[in-house]
Image 1 (cartoon, rainbow, N blue to C red):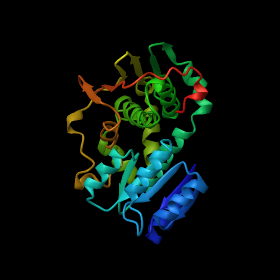
Image 2 (image 1 turned 45 degrees about the horizontal axis):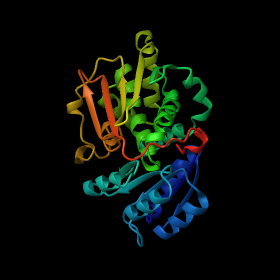
Image 3 (image 1 turned 45 degrees about the vertical axis):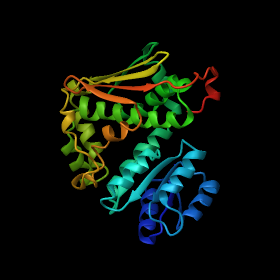
Image 4 (image 1 turned 120 degrees about the vertical axis):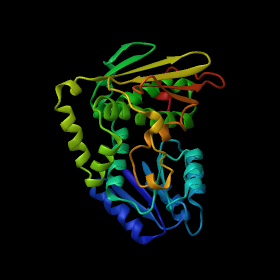
Length: 308
């Protein structure tokens, strides 16, 4: 994965580059917004970290410019501690995530791993296709986190004719977060505090926690069912896990000061920006999202002509 860092603080810029390169990614950097835009054109990154406060161009302005040209590149906006309004504005401008300084290495590693997985989906696409049990569409997934990216890719391709270019990537991000929650917190029963503690201990501790839960044969056999339906008026997705549910009303707001440094707990919050409605049903192990269909339906039948 190609990572571009736009940051005027040389120490932060060096830190982000070192973490990205240590994780095996190709990284480049820029000290100003203008240089960042130039590097975006020449480097063609998959993921961009951009600070909000730059000496020339505001980071939100950079985000807005990039989104007008490319909906697929992932953009993470870096803000100062307590910049709630800026974080909300960044998400409204289709940022994929936000970070607040000081930045922890385990948070960066977790984000890099997640977004890299989303880019590495093509080799599992055929395997995921065989998991579709009927059209109109129901998919049943085992609790395998390596399948999430390919499953979401297939779901977005099904919905692509009814979404414009900017909407598709947002739906992909939202579905990825919610399916991940269904597997990690639902089927494997990993609590918010357990995940936060594991991430704080180091980048490999959370993976060790997942593997321990999967060693339980009862948890390992649980599945996630995903339904997609399309009418002339709207698109519907329903995700259901086989866990015990959770108190979704009590999920912490990541914009509150004591939660800002925590990476987990953001999935539901981020997903709400991608759908017209998002509601949990019953005890919380079932979530339904909708998007209204606006304008004429794209009737392109050749999947290679539909950008996803």
